[in-house]
Image 1: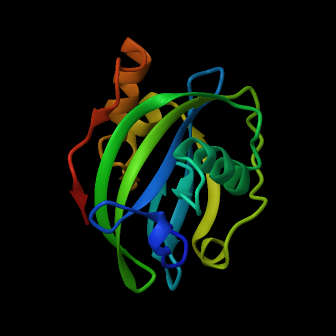
Image 2 (image 1 turned 90 degrees about the horizontal axis):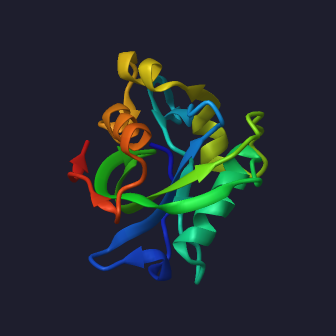
Length: 174
């Protein structure tokens, strides 16, 4: 799961967790956009993940979600919805362990063309593309996807609509 360089103190949530905003971006056909990443020095160690990243300085998570989406996909024309899910996770990446407090925002767009516009140096070495996935494709996927229950979560979202309030997902430690 790609991440930026070591966060500064102002970017940490309580308990030393990196504050992260992620985007569950859906197109008019209800396909979800996922980025394809890998360990910088091992392209075989790869996975798919939602756009997003760390909160910078005094920006809100909503502002971080919009900024990260624009930087990673070039998509700025979105309708940003509510926070769907919250998750804490811990994983190794690029030679260190990352501890994150992630909020997943729902967003919709009519634009499906993507172009990364402002990747960090680490992202340039580890993000190799983007793809729109249908829910059935995601359910059948053999690739690693984060969060690991994304296919089930997406199916529930499409069937029932956004939850009344953010759902706390199980902590994931990789």
